[in-house]
Image (cartoon, rainbow, N blue to C red; front, side):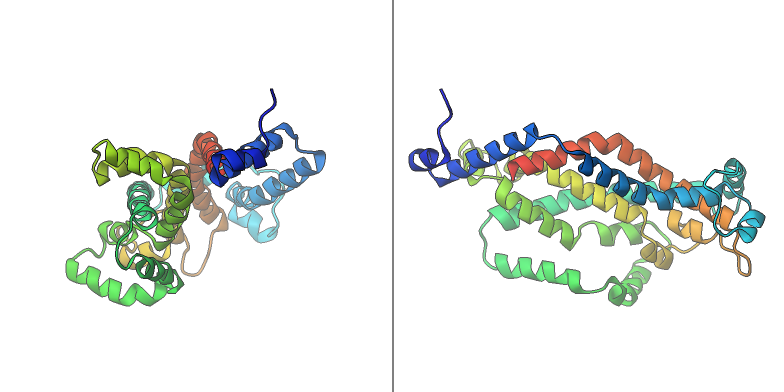
Amino acid sequence: MSAPSVPVISQTAGKGAARAAARRRSVAQGADRRPGGVTYVLLTVAVLASALPLYYAFLFASSTAQDIAQNPIPSLIPQGHFWDNVNRVLSSDIQFWTALGNSIIVAVITSVSVVLFSTLAGFSFSKLRFRGRAPLLVFVIATTAVPTQLGVVPLFILMSKLGWVGQLTSIIVPGLVTAFGVFWMTQYLESALPYELIEAARVDGASMIRTFWHVALPAARPAAFMLGLFAFVGSWTSFFGPFIFLGPANPTLPVAVQLLQASYFKDMSLIMAGVTLSVIPLIVMFFIAGRQLVAGIMQGAVKG
């Protein structure tokens, strides 16, 4: 017996069920189609173009300062000096291991807090009805139009009065939640979380916090994973804030790599070795989380 058509489902079960059936059928039809050769060629070109800057930095890191001065465009084959330059970075006075630990602490705490608070705010804005909800959401989104540099001076004065300058707290606290994360989770939960699930949890006696934890948070998992990845990468590669509030005494990795530059001479092999070392943890994380990343994207596409 063949499945009923979309118009029949619309007449019998309603327009919502008809749209859900149409989405399921489009996804099923798309899963049966295999990408052609042109798709693979374009994807290969995109991957090579994305990996070229990293490989270019690795080529510089595997050369010497004399070779780079003589040949600004390095050979496509590594020269074999990478580990020597790595040892020079680790033995320098930039406090590499301290900077690595600081970057891990700041990135992990920031990404977890951004996911938690943004999902909580997104759940409130998308599914709860309270006075001033729409204007408050517009205000939160409007803050993304304000450049970060405009708030540096008052934020630095505030951190100085709190005694947080030079401490990781001055970087972690301002990044606990972002306006982009609130907007991201609000838009996702608006369509991915049905009101029926919330009403069922409330009928069963669950409090609003328990409803959020057991209903909204699992439904937001795909978007929350993507948001956490964005927040982690943004925090890991951030230079402006740590340079202003931490300085060279207690740096993160981007600030420590910048300290490899001398006043009158820049050893590009040493600098690029530090850049390569700072990027390796991100590459490892992407390889480990690649399967979960693709699964989250596909799950979000099916739910949407």
